[in-house]
Amino acid sequence: MSYMVLARKYRPRNFSEMVGQEHVVQALTNALNQQRLHHAYLFTGTRGVGKTTVSRILAKSLNCTGADGQGGITATPCGACPACTEIEAGRFVDYTELDAASNRGVDEVQQLLEQALYKPVQGRFKVFMIDEVHMLTNTAFNAMLKTLEEPPEYLKFVLATTDPQKVPVTVLSRCLQFNLRPMAPETVLAQLAHVLGAEQVSAEPQALRLLARAARGSMRDALSLTDQAIAFGSGKVQETTVRQMLGSVDRGVVFSLIGALAAGDGKAVIDLSGQLRAAGLSAATTLEDMAAALQRMAVLQAAPGLPADEADPDAQDIARLAAELPADETQLLYSLCIHGRAELGLAPDEYAGLTMVLLRLLPFKRPAAAATAEKKTLNQTEAPAPPSDPAGPDSSEFAPPDAGWAGQPAPNDGLDDGAPATARVPVLPLPVREPPAPRKPESSQAAAEQSPVAAEIVALKVREASGEPVPPRPAPAPDPRPVQTTGEGDFWHALVQELVAREAITAVVRELALQSQLVARSDSQWTLRVENESLANAGAQARLQAALLDAGHAVRLGVEVGTVADSPSRRNAIAAAQRMKAAESLLMADPFVREMMRDFGAKIVPGSIKPL
Image 1 (cartoon, rainbow, N blue to C red):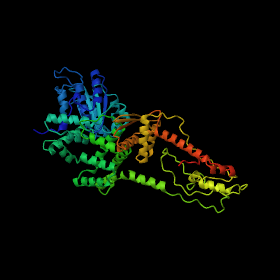
Image 2: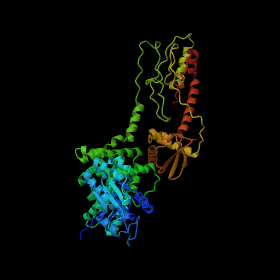
Image 3: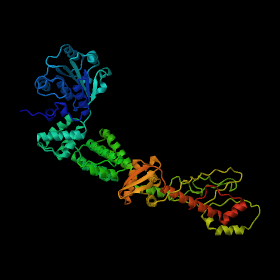
Image 4: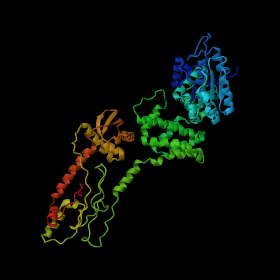
Protein backbone atom coordinates (compact mmCIF):
# COMPACT_ATOMS: atom_id res chain seq x y z
CA MET A 1 0.00 0.00 0.00
CA SER A 2 1.42 3.37 -1.03
CA TYR A 3 2.19 5.94 1.65
CA MET A 4 -0.02 9.05 1.80
CA VAL A 5 1.72 12.20 2.97
CA LEU A 6 0.45 13.85 6.12
CA ALA A 7 -0.73 16.99 4.30
CA ARG A 8 -3.16 14.91 2.22
CA LYS A 9 -4.03 12.33 4.84
CA TYR A 10 -5.07 14.92 7.41
CA ARG A 11 -6.69 17.44 5.06
CA PRO A 12 -9.97 18.55 6.73
CA ARG A 13 -13.08 16.88 5.33
CA ASN A 14 -15.63 19.11 7.04
CA PHE A 15 -15.73 22.50 8.75
CA SER A 16 -15.31 21.04 12.24
CA GLU A 17 -11.82 19.79 11.31
CA MET A 18 -10.66 23.21 10.08
CA VAL A 19 -8.22 24.98 12.42
CA GLY A 20 -7.02 28.56 12.43
CA GLN A 21 -9.81 29.92 10.17
CA GLU A 22 -12.70 30.23 12.60
CA HIS A 23 -13.91 33.53 11.08
CA VAL A 24 -14.41 31.89 7.65
CA VAL A 25 -15.92 28.71 9.07
CA GLN A 26 -18.45 30.63 11.17
CA ALA A 27 -19.59 32.81 8.26
CA LEU A 28 -20.03 29.88 5.87
CA THR A 29 -21.73 27.73 8.51
CA ASN A 30 -24.30 30.40 9.28
CA ALA A 31 -24.91 31.03 5.57
CA LEU A 32 -25.49 27.31 4.91
CA ASN A 33 -27.76 26.86 7.92
CA GLN A 34 -29.87 29.86 6.90
CA GLN A 35 -29.49 29.04 3.17
CA ARG A 36 -28.41 32.60 2.44
CA LEU A 37 -26.08 31.50 -0.36
CA HIS A 38 -24.07 33.83 -2.57
CA HIS A 39 -23.43 32.93 -6.18
CA ALA A 40 -19.66 33.65 -6.12
CA TYR A 41 -17.06 33.28 -3.38
CA LEU A 42 -13.45 34.49 -3.37
CA PHE A 43 -10.97 32.93 -0.93
CA THR A 44 -7.63 34.73 -0.51
CA GLY A 45 -4.56 33.93 1.55
CA THR A 46 -1.00 32.62 1.44
CA ARG A 47 -0.12 29.08 0.42
CA GLY A 48 -1.24 26.16 2.56
CA VAL A 49 -3.90 27.90 4.66
CA GLY A 50 -6.93 25.99 3.30
CA LYS A 51 -8.35 27.78 0.25
CA THR A 52 -8.87 24.65 -1.86
CA THR A 53 -9.95 22.67 1.20
CA VAL A 54 -12.70 25.18 2.04
CA SER A 55 -13.84 25.11 -1.59
CA ARG A 56 -14.24 21.32 -1.53
CA ILE A 57 -16.05 21.33 1.81
CA LEU A 58 -18.40 24.03 0.50
CA ALA A 59 -19.10 21.95 -2.64
CA LYS A 60 -19.89 18.91 -0.46
CA SER A 61 -22.16 21.01 1.79
CA LEU A 62 -24.12 22.23 -1.24
CA ASN A 63 -24.55 18.76 -2.80
CA CYS A 64 -24.67 16.41 0.23
CA THR A 65 -27.70 14.12 0.25
CA GLY A 66 -27.02 12.44 3.57
CA ALA A 67 -26.33 8.80 4.33
CA ASP A 68 -29.98 7.95 3.61
CA GLY A 69 -30.11 10.01 0.41
CA GLN A 70 -32.75 12.38 1.82
CA GLY A 71 -30.55 15.20 3.10
CA GLY A 72 -30.39 18.78 1.91
CA ILE A 73 -28.00 21.71 2.07
CA THR A 74 -26.05 21.38 5.31
CA ALA A 75 -23.04 22.81 7.11
CA THR A 76 -22.01 19.30 8.23
CA PRO A 77 -21.64 17.08 5.14
CA CYS A 78 -21.94 13.39 5.93
CA GLY A 79 -18.89 12.26 3.98
CA ALA A 80 -20.63 9.00 3.08
CA CYS A 81 -23.05 9.88 0.29
CA PRO A 82 -21.99 9.61 -3.38
CA ALA A 83 -21.58 13.38 -3.72
CA CYS A 84 -19.26 13.66 -0.71
CA THR A 85 -17.13 10.66 -1.61
CA GLU A 86 -16.78 11.60 -5.29
CA ILE A 87 -15.95 15.24 -4.56
CA GLU A 88 -13.32 14.02 -2.09
CA ALA A 89 -11.91 11.70 -4.77
CA GLY A 90 -12.00 14.46 -7.44
CA ARG A 91 -14.37 12.74 -9.87
CA PHE A 92 -17.71 14.44 -9.21
CA VAL A 93 -19.05 15.49 -12.58
CA ASP A 94 -20.73 18.68 -11.30
CA TYR A 95 -17.63 19.92 -9.47
CA THR A 96 -14.97 21.36 -11.78
CA GLU A 97 -11.56 22.61 -10.66
CA LEU A 98 -9.66 24.81 -13.12
CA ASP A 99 -6.00 25.64 -12.56
CA ALA A 100 -5.73 29.20 -13.87
CA ALA A 101 -1.94 29.07 -13.73
CA SER A 102 -1.87 26.64 -16.68
CA ASN A 103 -5.29 27.48 -18.18
CA ARG A 104 -5.18 31.25 -18.23
CA GLY A 105 -6.42 32.10 -21.69
CA VAL A 106 -9.82 33.15 -22.93
CA ASP A 107 -10.34 29.82 -24.75
CA GLU A 108 -10.07 27.76 -21.57
CA VAL A 109 -12.46 30.08 -19.73
CA GLN A 110 -14.89 29.99 -22.65
CA GLN A 111 -14.92 26.20 -22.56
CA LEU A 112 -15.68 26.29 -18.83
CA LEU A 113 -18.51 28.78 -19.27
CA GLU A 114 -20.10 26.65 -22.00
CA GLN A 115 -20.76 24.00 -19.33
CA ALA A 116 -22.80 26.57 -17.38
CA LEU A 117 -25.60 26.22 -19.92
CA TYR A 118 -26.37 22.70 -18.71
CA LYS A 119 -27.99 21.83 -15.41
CA PRO A 120 -26.27 19.59 -12.87
CA VAL A 121 -26.18 15.90 -13.78
CA GLN A 122 -25.81 14.34 -10.32
CA GLY A 123 -25.73 17.06 -7.74
CA ARG A 124 -27.90 19.89 -6.54
CA PHE A 125 -25.51 22.61 -7.72
CA LYS A 126 -22.84 22.89 -10.37
CA VAL A 127 -19.69 24.34 -8.75
CA PHE A 128 -16.83 25.92 -10.72
CA MET A 129 -13.65 26.27 -8.68
CA ILE A 130 -10.89 28.42 -10.32
CA ASP A 131 -7.60 28.22 -8.44
CA GLU A 132 -4.96 30.99 -8.70
CA VAL A 133 -7.54 33.11 -10.49
CA HIS A 134 -5.22 36.12 -10.58
CA MET A 135 -3.22 34.34 -13.33
CA LEU A 136 -6.06 34.75 -15.87
CA THR A 137 -5.54 37.24 -18.66
CA ASN A 138 -7.57 40.42 -18.89
CA THR A 139 -9.45 38.99 -21.86
CA ALA A 140 -10.34 35.89 -19.86
CA PHE A 141 -11.59 38.01 -16.97
CA ASN A 142 -13.74 40.06 -19.32
CA ALA A 143 -15.17 36.90 -20.86
CA MET A 144 -16.46 35.62 -17.51
CA LEU A 145 -17.78 38.92 -16.10
CA LYS A 146 -21.36 38.60 -17.36
CA THR A 147 -21.79 34.99 -16.26
CA LEU A 148 -20.10 35.76 -12.91
CA GLU A 149 -22.54 38.62 -12.26
CA GLU A 150 -25.77 36.77 -13.16
CA PRO A 151 -25.15 33.01 -13.20
CA PRO A 152 -27.98 30.45 -13.35
CA GLU A 153 -29.45 29.59 -9.96
CA TYR A 154 -27.84 26.14 -10.04
CA LEU A 155 -24.31 27.50 -10.63
CA LYS A 156 -21.83 28.59 -7.94
CA PHE A 157 -18.41 30.14 -8.54
CA VAL A 158 -15.57 29.59 -6.07
CA LEU A 159 -12.37 31.56 -6.81
CA ALA A 160 -9.08 31.20 -4.94
CA THR A 161 -5.95 33.36 -5.14
CA THR A 162 -2.74 34.13 -3.25
CA ASP A 163 -2.55 37.63 -4.78
CA PRO A 164 -5.91 39.43 -4.67
CA GLN A 165 -4.26 42.70 -5.73
CA LYS A 166 -4.03 41.36 -9.29
CA VAL A 167 -7.72 40.49 -9.50
CA PRO A 168 -9.72 43.24 -11.29
CA VAL A 169 -12.09 45.20 -9.12
CA THR A 170 -14.90 44.29 -11.50
CA VAL A 171 -14.44 40.66 -10.40
CA LEU A 172 -13.96 41.53 -6.72
CA SER A 173 -17.24 43.47 -6.67
CA ARG A 174 -19.15 40.40 -7.87
CA CYS A 175 -17.78 38.04 -5.20
CA LEU A 176 -18.18 37.48 -1.48
CA GLN A 177 -14.57 37.72 -0.29
CA PHE A 178 -13.01 35.79 2.60
CA ASN A 179 -9.40 36.28 3.68
CA LEU A 180 -7.81 33.15 5.15
CA ARG A 181 -5.13 34.29 7.58
CA PRO A 182 -1.70 32.75 8.18
CA MET A 183 -1.96 30.49 11.20
CA ALA A 184 -0.33 31.36 14.51
CA PRO A 185 2.61 29.16 15.56
CA GLU A 186 0.62 28.04 18.60
CA THR A 187 -2.21 26.81 16.33
CA VAL A 188 0.21 24.94 14.08
CA LEU A 189 1.96 23.47 17.12
CA ALA A 190 -1.30 22.10 18.55
CA GLN A 191 -2.29 20.57 15.19
CA LEU A 192 1.14 18.93 14.76
CA ALA A 193 0.89 17.43 18.23
CA HIS A 194 -2.56 16.05 17.34
CA VAL A 195 -1.37 14.58 14.02
CA LEU A 196 1.75 12.96 15.51
CA GLY A 197 -0.32 11.57 18.36
CA ALA A 198 -2.64 9.94 15.84
CA GLU A 199 0.38 8.62 13.92
CA GLN A 200 1.94 7.35 17.18
CA VAL A 201 5.20 9.19 16.48
CA SER A 202 7.17 10.44 19.48
CA ALA A 203 8.06 14.14 19.27
CA GLU A 204 9.84 16.61 21.53
CA PRO A 205 7.90 19.83 22.25
CA GLN A 206 10.81 22.08 21.28
CA ALA A 207 11.14 20.25 17.95
CA LEU A 208 7.47 20.94 17.23
CA ARG A 209 8.05 24.62 18.09
CA LEU A 210 10.82 24.77 15.51
CA LEU A 211 8.61 23.18 12.86
CA ALA A 212 5.70 25.48 13.69
CA ARG A 213 7.90 28.58 13.34
CA ALA A 214 9.50 27.29 10.13
CA ALA A 215 6.06 26.79 8.54
CA ARG A 216 5.42 30.56 8.64
CA GLY A 217 1.66 30.21 9.02
CA SER A 218 1.13 27.45 6.46
CA MET A 219 -0.34 24.21 7.77
CA ARG A 220 0.59 22.34 4.59
CA ASP A 221 4.23 23.44 4.95
CA ALA A 222 4.20 22.39 8.61
CA LEU A 223 2.93 18.89 7.77
CA SER A 224 5.41 18.56 4.90
CA LEU A 225 8.29 19.54 7.19
CA THR A 226 7.01 17.07 9.76
CA ASP A 227 7.09 14.31 7.15
CA GLN A 228 10.68 15.25 6.38
CA ALA A 229 11.60 15.37 10.08
CA ILE A 230 10.14 11.89 10.66
CA ALA A 231 12.21 10.51 7.80
CA PHE A 232 15.33 12.42 8.89
CA GLY A 233 15.00 11.23 12.49
CA SER A 234 14.24 7.59 11.67
CA GLY A 235 10.68 7.75 12.97
CA LYS A 236 11.32 10.25 15.80
CA VAL A 237 10.98 14.02 15.86
CA GLN A 238 13.78 15.35 18.07
CA GLU A 239 15.04 18.87 18.58
CA THR A 240 18.64 18.16 17.57
CA THR A 241 17.69 16.43 14.33
CA VAL A 242 15.11 19.09 13.45
CA ARG A 243 17.66 21.86 14.02
CA GLN A 244 20.13 20.02 11.82
CA MET A 245 17.49 19.51 9.14
CA LEU A 246 16.32 23.15 9.16
CA GLY A 247 19.80 24.62 9.65
CA SER A 248 18.47 26.47 12.69
CA VAL A 249 20.76 28.00 15.26
CA ASP A 250 20.59 26.74 18.81
CA ARG A 251 18.60 29.18 20.94
CA GLY A 252 21.44 29.24 23.45
CA VAL A 253 23.75 30.68 20.77
CA VAL A 254 21.15 33.32 19.88
CA PHE A 255 20.81 34.37 23.50
CA SER A 256 24.59 34.38 23.89
CA LEU A 257 24.91 36.73 20.91
CA ILE A 258 22.33 39.12 22.32
CA GLY A 259 23.96 38.96 25.76
CA ALA A 260 27.39 39.73 24.27
CA LEU A 261 25.96 42.71 22.40
CA ALA A 262 24.25 43.93 25.57
CA ALA A 263 27.61 43.77 27.37
CA GLY A 264 29.45 45.42 24.48
CA ASP A 265 31.78 42.40 24.15
CA GLY A 266 32.93 42.47 20.53
CA LYS A 267 35.33 39.54 20.95
CA ALA A 268 32.54 37.25 22.16
CA VAL A 269 30.40 38.27 19.16
CA ILE A 270 33.22 37.42 16.73
CA ASP A 271 33.89 34.08 18.47
CA LEU A 272 30.22 33.08 18.32
CA SER A 273 30.03 34.06 14.64
CA GLY A 274 33.06 31.83 14.02
CA GLN A 275 31.29 28.95 15.77
CA LEU A 276 28.29 29.38 13.48
CA ARG A 277 30.60 29.34 10.44
CA ALA A 278 32.30 26.16 11.67
CA ALA A 279 28.91 24.46 12.22
CA GLY A 280 27.71 25.51 8.75
CA LEU A 281 24.56 27.14 10.10
CA SER A 282 22.59 29.72 8.15
CA ALA A 283 23.44 33.37 8.78
CA ALA A 284 19.99 34.46 7.56
CA THR A 285 18.31 32.04 9.98
CA THR A 286 20.48 33.41 12.79
CA LEU A 287 19.27 36.94 12.12
CA GLU A 288 15.67 35.71 11.91
CA ASP A 289 15.93 33.94 15.26
CA MET A 290 17.56 37.00 16.83
CA ALA A 291 14.81 39.25 15.48
CA ALA A 292 12.16 36.91 16.93
CA ALA A 293 13.86 36.96 20.35
CA LEU A 294 14.30 40.76 20.24
CA GLN A 295 10.62 41.19 19.38
CA ARG A 296 9.64 39.25 22.48
CA MET A 297 12.12 41.31 24.53
CA ALA A 298 10.63 44.57 23.23
CA VAL A 299 7.12 43.42 24.16
CA LEU A 300 8.29 42.50 27.65
CA GLN A 301 10.05 45.88 28.05
CA ALA A 302 6.96 47.78 26.91
CA ALA A 303 4.59 45.73 29.09
CA PRO A 304 6.62 44.21 31.94
CA GLY A 305 3.51 42.91 33.69
CA LEU A 306 2.56 40.38 31.00
CA PRO A 307 2.36 36.83 32.36
CA ALA A 308 5.06 34.48 31.09
CA ASP A 309 4.31 31.20 29.34
CA GLU A 310 5.50 28.56 31.79
CA ALA A 311 5.64 25.96 29.02
CA ASP A 312 8.06 28.10 27.00
CA PRO A 313 11.66 27.14 27.87
CA ASP A 314 12.94 30.47 26.49
CA ALA A 315 10.83 32.69 28.76
CA GLN A 316 13.47 33.06 31.49
CA ASP A 317 16.25 33.92 29.01
CA ILE A 318 14.00 36.46 27.27
CA ALA A 319 13.18 38.13 30.60
CA ARG A 320 16.85 38.21 31.63
CA LEU A 321 18.00 39.79 28.35
CA ALA A 322 15.12 42.28 28.42
CA ALA A 323 16.45 43.55 31.75
CA GLU A 324 20.06 43.71 30.50
CA LEU A 325 19.55 45.46 27.16
CA PRO A 326 18.03 48.99 27.19
CA ALA A 327 14.78 49.39 25.30
CA ASP A 328 16.22 51.80 22.73
CA GLU A 329 19.10 49.42 21.95
CA THR A 330 16.63 46.55 21.65
CA GLN A 331 14.73 48.48 18.99
CA LEU A 332 17.96 49.40 17.20
CA LEU A 333 19.29 45.84 17.21
CA TYR A 334 15.94 44.52 15.94
CA SER A 335 16.09 46.98 13.04
CA LEU A 336 19.69 46.00 12.30
CA CYS A 337 18.78 42.30 12.19
CA ILE A 338 15.78 42.87 9.91
CA HIS A 339 17.64 45.08 7.44
CA GLY A 340 20.85 43.04 7.74
CA ARG A 341 19.20 40.02 6.08
CA ALA A 342 18.94 41.94 2.82
CA GLU A 343 22.63 42.87 3.01
CA LEU A 344 23.94 39.31 3.35
CA GLY A 345 23.97 38.85 -0.41
CA LEU A 346 26.17 41.94 -0.84
CA ALA A 347 28.83 40.80 1.64
CA PRO A 348 31.96 38.81 0.63
CA ASP A 349 30.33 35.83 2.35
CA GLU A 350 27.27 35.55 4.55
CA TYR A 351 29.24 35.04 7.77
CA ALA A 352 31.24 38.23 7.18
CA GLY A 353 27.93 39.98 6.58
CA LEU A 354 26.50 38.48 9.77
CA THR A 355 29.52 39.63 11.81
CA MET A 356 29.32 43.18 10.45
CA VAL A 357 25.58 43.39 11.09
CA LEU A 358 26.08 42.37 14.72
CA LEU A 359 29.12 44.59 15.31
CA ARG A 360 27.20 47.56 13.93
CA LEU A 361 25.43 47.95 17.28
CA LEU A 362 28.63 48.37 19.29
CA PRO A 363 29.59 51.89 18.04
CA PHE A 364 26.18 53.11 19.21
CA LYS A 365 26.83 51.91 22.76
CA ARG A 366 28.53 54.57 24.88
CA PRO A 367 30.62 53.08 27.68
CA ALA A 368 30.20 54.76 31.06
CA ALA A 369 33.99 55.14 31.46
CA ALA A 370 34.29 57.05 28.19
CA ALA A 371 31.43 59.37 29.12
CA THR A 372 33.02 60.04 32.53
CA ALA A 373 36.40 60.80 31.00
CA GLU A 374 34.85 63.15 28.48
CA LYS A 375 32.95 65.09 31.16
CA LYS A 376 36.06 65.39 33.32
CA THR A 377 38.05 66.65 30.32
CA LEU A 378 35.43 69.29 29.60
CA ASN A 379 35.26 70.39 33.23
CA GLN A 380 39.02 70.63 33.70
CA THR A 381 39.84 72.46 30.47
CA GLU A 382 41.40 75.86 31.16
CA ALA A 383 39.77 78.76 29.38
CA PRO A 384 42.15 80.81 27.18
CA ALA A 385 43.42 84.11 28.44
CA PRO A 386 41.41 87.20 27.49
CA PRO A 387 42.60 89.11 24.44
CA SER A 388 44.70 92.16 25.15
CA ASP A 389 43.22 95.55 24.48
CA PRO A 390 45.73 97.75 22.63
CA ALA A 391 43.79 100.87 23.38
CA GLY A 392 44.04 100.40 27.13
CA PRO A 393 41.47 99.68 29.75
CA ASP A 394 39.66 102.95 29.31
CA SER A 395 38.86 102.54 25.62
CA SER A 396 36.51 99.61 25.66
CA GLU A 397 34.52 97.30 27.84
CA PHE A 398 35.22 93.92 29.30
CA ALA A 399 33.88 90.71 27.76
CA PRO A 400 30.13 90.17 27.62
CA PRO A 401 28.61 87.83 30.17
CA ASP A 402 28.59 84.81 27.81
CA ALA A 403 32.24 85.06 26.82
CA GLY A 404 34.17 81.87 27.44
CA TRP A 405 37.18 83.62 29.04
CA ALA A 406 35.25 85.96 31.34
CA GLY A 407 35.44 85.53 35.08
CA GLN A 408 31.69 84.98 35.28
CA PRO A 409 31.07 81.20 35.20
CA ALA A 410 28.98 79.96 32.30
CA PRO A 411 25.35 79.47 33.32
CA ASN A 412 24.33 75.93 34.03
CA ASP A 413 21.48 75.02 31.71
CA GLY A 414 20.79 71.70 33.40
CA LEU A 415 19.06 71.00 36.66
CA ASP A 416 22.09 69.41 38.32
CA ASP A 417 23.23 71.89 40.94
CA GLY A 418 25.97 69.54 42.04
CA ALA A 419 27.85 69.74 38.73
CA PRO A 420 31.43 71.04 38.88
CA ALA A 421 31.79 74.77 38.49
CA THR A 422 33.46 76.32 35.45
CA ALA A 423 37.22 76.70 35.73
CA ARG A 424 38.23 80.04 37.23
CA VAL A 425 40.74 82.36 35.65
CA PRO A 426 43.02 84.89 37.36
CA VAL A 427 41.35 87.97 38.78
CA LEU A 428 41.11 90.72 36.20
CA PRO A 429 42.15 94.20 37.40
CA LEU A 430 39.44 96.78 37.67
CA PRO A 431 39.74 99.67 35.18
CA VAL A 432 41.69 102.56 36.65
CA ARG A 433 39.82 105.84 36.71
CA GLU A 434 40.78 109.22 37.97
CA PRO A 435 39.04 109.53 41.34
CA PRO A 436 37.25 112.80 42.07
CA ALA A 437 39.36 113.29 45.20
CA PRO A 438 42.04 111.16 46.84
CA ARG A 439 40.54 109.56 49.84
CA LYS A 440 42.62 107.23 51.99
CA PRO A 441 43.91 104.89 49.31
CA GLU A 442 45.86 103.02 51.95
CA SER A 443 42.68 101.99 53.70
CA SER A 444 41.19 100.77 50.43
CA GLN A 445 44.29 98.77 49.64
CA ALA A 446 44.35 97.30 53.13
CA ALA A 447 40.68 96.44 52.92
CA ALA A 448 41.30 94.72 49.60
CA GLU A 449 44.12 92.68 51.06
CA GLN A 450 42.20 91.73 54.19
CA SER A 451 38.81 91.03 52.60
CA PRO A 452 38.21 87.27 52.26
CA VAL A 453 35.19 87.85 50.04
CA ALA A 454 37.04 89.99 47.52
CA ALA A 455 39.60 87.23 47.10
CA GLU A 456 36.80 84.78 46.27
CA ILE A 457 35.21 87.05 43.68
CA VAL A 458 36.34 85.90 40.28
CA ALA A 459 35.65 89.11 38.38
CA LEU A 460 33.21 91.97 38.16
CA LYS A 461 32.15 92.94 34.66
CA VAL A 462 32.40 96.78 34.48
CA ARG A 463 31.44 99.02 31.57
CA GLU A 464 32.08 102.58 30.64
CA ALA A 465 29.41 104.93 31.89
CA SER A 466 28.73 105.99 28.31
CA GLY A 467 28.22 102.43 27.03
CA GLU A 468 24.88 100.67 26.78
CA PRO A 469 24.76 97.87 29.36
CA VAL A 470 24.18 94.36 28.01
CA PRO A 471 21.18 92.83 29.76
CA PRO A 472 22.27 89.78 31.76
CA ARG A 473 20.82 86.36 31.18
CA PRO A 474 17.89 85.98 33.58
CA ALA A 475 18.27 83.30 36.20
CA PRO A 476 15.59 80.60 36.21
CA ALA A 477 12.80 81.44 38.60
CA PRO A 478 12.47 78.99 41.48
CA ASP A 479 9.33 76.94 41.79
CA PRO A 480 6.98 79.00 44.03
CA ARG A 481 5.23 75.89 45.35
CA PRO A 482 6.49 74.72 48.74
CA VAL A 483 8.02 71.27 49.06
CA GLN A 484 5.99 68.84 51.14
CA THR A 485 8.82 66.84 52.65
CA THR A 486 8.28 63.19 53.44
CA GLY A 487 10.42 60.29 54.52
CA GLU A 488 10.20 58.80 51.04
CA GLY A 489 11.31 62.15 49.60
CA ASP A 490 14.37 62.25 51.89
CA PHE A 491 15.35 58.74 50.84
CA TRP A 492 14.78 59.42 47.12
CA HIS A 493 16.67 62.74 47.23
CA ALA A 494 19.71 61.15 48.87
CA LEU A 495 19.69 58.22 46.43
CA VAL A 496 19.34 60.41 43.34
CA GLN A 497 22.14 62.73 44.53
CA GLU A 498 24.36 59.68 44.93
CA LEU A 499 23.52 58.40 41.42
CA VAL A 500 24.16 61.83 39.91
CA ALA A 501 27.46 62.22 41.75
CA ARG A 502 28.64 58.83 40.48
CA GLU A 503 27.36 59.72 36.97
CA ALA A 504 25.39 56.49 36.96
CA ILE A 505 22.49 58.35 35.29
CA THR A 506 22.75 60.96 32.56
CA ALA A 507 20.63 62.91 30.09
CA VAL A 508 16.93 61.97 30.08
CA VAL A 509 17.36 59.33 32.78
CA ARG A 510 18.87 61.93 35.13
CA GLU A 511 16.00 64.33 34.42
CA LEU A 512 13.47 61.57 35.16
CA ALA A 513 15.12 60.89 38.53
CA LEU A 514 15.49 64.57 39.46
CA GLN A 515 11.97 65.64 38.52
CA SER A 516 10.12 62.64 39.97
CA GLN A 517 8.58 61.99 43.36
CA LEU A 518 8.80 58.62 45.09
CA VAL A 519 5.17 58.03 46.08
CA ALA A 520 5.30 54.36 47.05
CA ARG A 521 8.05 51.90 47.92
CA SER A 522 8.05 48.21 48.76
CA ASP A 523 10.60 45.43 48.64
CA SER A 524 9.89 44.66 44.98
CA GLN A 525 8.04 47.67 43.52
CA TRP A 526 8.74 51.42 43.51
CA THR A 527 6.34 53.96 42.03
CA LEU A 528 7.49 57.37 40.78
CA ARG A 529 5.34 60.33 39.76
CA VAL A 530 6.30 62.98 37.20
CA GLU A 531 4.49 66.00 35.84
CA ASN A 532 6.14 65.94 32.40
CA GLU A 533 4.59 63.10 30.42
CA SER A 534 7.54 62.96 28.00
CA LEU A 535 9.78 61.75 30.84
CA ALA A 536 7.56 58.73 31.51
CA ASN A 537 8.79 56.79 28.48
CA ALA A 538 9.68 53.12 28.63
CA GLY A 539 13.32 53.62 27.60
CA ALA A 540 14.21 56.09 30.36
CA GLN A 541 12.26 53.99 32.89
CA ALA A 542 14.17 50.82 31.93
CA ARG A 543 17.58 52.54 32.17
CA LEU A 544 16.75 54.09 35.54
CA GLN A 545 15.64 50.67 36.78
CA ALA A 546 18.96 49.23 35.60
CA ALA A 547 20.87 51.99 37.43
CA LEU A 548 18.93 51.23 40.62
CA LEU A 549 19.79 47.55 40.19
CA ASP A 550 23.49 48.43 39.95
CA ALA A 551 23.11 50.50 43.13
CA GLY A 552 21.77 47.46 44.99
CA HIS A 553 18.02 48.05 44.65
CA ALA A 554 16.54 45.09 42.75
CA VAL A 555 13.06 46.51 42.27
CA ARG A 556 10.57 46.92 39.47
CA LEU A 557 9.99 50.57 38.63
CA GLY A 558 6.67 52.11 37.70
CA VAL A 559 6.10 55.69 36.52
CA GLU A 560 2.81 57.61 36.63
CA VAL A 561 1.90 61.13 35.57
CA GLY A 562 0.49 63.52 38.15
CA THR A 563 1.18 66.44 40.49
CA VAL A 564 4.61 66.32 42.14
CA ALA A 565 4.86 67.75 45.68
CA ASP A 566 8.44 66.73 46.48
CA SER A 567 11.26 66.04 44.00
CA PRO A 568 15.07 66.20 44.14
CA SER A 569 15.15 69.01 41.56
CA ARG A 570 12.84 71.22 43.63
CA ARG A 571 14.88 70.55 46.75
CA ASN A 572 18.05 71.40 44.83
CA ALA A 573 16.46 74.59 43.51
CA ILE A 574 15.47 75.71 47.01
CA ALA A 575 18.96 74.95 48.34
CA ALA A 576 20.54 76.84 45.43
CA ALA A 577 18.32 79.85 46.06
CA GLN A 578 19.33 79.85 49.71
CA ARG A 579 23.01 79.69 48.79
CA MET A 580 22.57 82.53 46.32
CA LYS A 581 20.82 84.69 48.88
CA ALA A 582 23.59 84.02 51.41
CA ALA A 583 26.26 84.88 48.83
CA GLU A 584 24.54 88.15 47.92
CA SER A 585 24.22 89.12 51.57
CA LEU A 586 27.88 88.30 52.23
CA LEU A 587 29.02 90.29 49.20
CA MET A 588 26.90 93.34 49.99
CA ALA A 589 28.25 93.35 53.55
CA ASP A 590 31.90 93.29 52.44
CA PRO A 591 33.68 96.62 53.27
CA PHE A 592 35.69 96.72 50.06
CA VAL A 593 32.63 96.24 47.87
CA ARG A 594 30.69 98.87 49.76
CA GLU A 595 33.59 101.34 49.47
CA MET A 596 33.88 100.75 45.71
CA MET A 597 30.18 101.37 45.31
CA ARG A 598 30.33 104.50 47.44
CA ASP A 599 33.52 106.08 46.05
CA PHE A 600 33.41 105.08 42.39
CA GLY A 601 29.72 104.48 41.76
CA ALA A 602 30.35 100.79 41.05
CA LYS A 603 27.36 98.53 40.57
CA ILE A 604 27.05 94.78 40.72
CA VAL A 605 25.75 93.41 37.43
CA PRO A 606 22.57 91.42 38.13
CA GLY A 607 23.09 87.72 37.66
CA SER A 608 26.89 87.95 37.89
CA ILE A 609 27.11 86.49 41.42
CA LYS A 610 27.61 82.74 41.62
CA PRO A 611 27.87 80.97 44.98
CA LEU A 612 30.99 78.82 45.24
